[in-house]
Length: 311
Image (cartoon, rainbow, N blue to C red):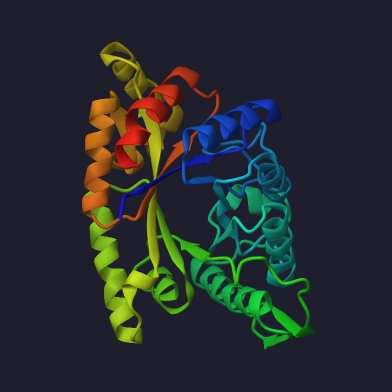
């Protein structure tokens, strides 16, 4: 099966018209997937003063602006919304999209957003507990007639979620690479797993750990769709590619060394070779993560010269 190529475009530092243009370009070119992220502040950010649109509203717009491409969020933070409300959101967007919605969930990590918006930011262990409870509630509400669940962080009592989604049900993705809890949760509960900004070698290592968790729980790992998000610094020629490396350093600052191995650098030929490495590492899908201001010529080169290689 061919690797499925998608676009993960943050709704920050741009206009709504920019996003509409990008979505139309991507769908017309035949990408498999378009997703956005769940942030209130621009990311990466030290102060949070940049422009950033809200995720649920923008997903509804994405759903109604497209007709074929799969759409989703990688990932909704379990700390930001009651999972019963999130289940209703998922159903609504699934209907708006005609059954194309993919629901991503994660533990949340951007402390600045939490503190600024008055949202508790507990230690990672508690956030992972919240994620697990959220997944259980959402899965039940999307498929069962009613849901009752009493957890340490979330509870619902005889909760209905009607109408049910068009899909039966939408896939639930868990994002993250934590070996002791996150990948365990993927093996137990998820239909899809997404990792971000890691090398093909590191991705393969994490995949093998996921497969061990699947073996522990008696689950076939093939039942879990695996994808990876990578940064996008493709150059339209060699000179432009060199400029993109400098841009990457400027954009990411002190975090650059941490994420550099999870970026696409070079010309289209280099990018194709790198994507092949992720495919060989076991990825079913790869999404290029775009940050505004969007480099329209580079995106066009990707859609015309890279995407067709994997169709």
